[in-house]
Structure formats: structure tokens, C-alpha cells
Image (cartoon, rainbow, N blue to C red; front, top):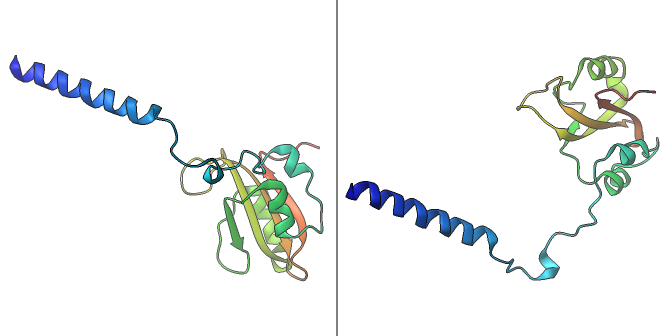
Length: 137
């Protein structure tokens, strides 16, 4: 019985300590806290991207991508639609930037939700964009 009471008290103390840590006010100065005006990877922002934009211009609209892939090196396709697009156009493309909104596991998955943009090899400007699920026209 004594062991049981000791264990219950220990659990209670740990729980109160955790609550105290998570509800403590921030000690960071306001200038070092993240800005609330970061660009977001939203459908509206993705749809506003235009051909001919640079990666920096795209980042200004969408925020930092989850990944940027060199399409002249090895990479994994993200969906059957993208695989077909890359088979047809890989020789013309330099890189792909991807923003995951929902990612299931480490490898590509048909249930992942993402936006991607593709940059041309000649001028490194935006030439195409795809999403999963595919955009309805």
C-alpha cells in the first residue's frame, strides 16, 4: 500500500510540473518570436503563381518549400500524374519545389496533399505546377 501511495504522489507531482512548464509565459523578447505574417502554402497562393517567376518570387508567395529537388539527379516521383509529366519533360526541367500540406510517411503516397512547381533548365523560371489531389479545371 505504501508503494502505491508513493507512486500516485510521484505521478501527481510530475503532472503538476508538466502543466506549470507548458503554461509559463514566454521569456523570449517580442522581436525574436516568429512573425505572424509568414507566407502560407494555400490553394489561393498556389493558384496565383504565374509562369516566368523565379524560385525566390515563388517563395515570397508560398513560403519556404518542404523540399527542393534537382531533377537532373535521382529523385522520386510524387504521383502517377507527376511521373507522366516528368517522363515527358525531364530534359527541359532543372528543379522541383514541393510544399506538403499533409504527408503520410517517408515515401510518396497517393494520399499525400501537396503543391509543386517546376523550373525550366534554360532560364530557371517557373514553367509548370502540379498538385495532389489534381486541380479541377
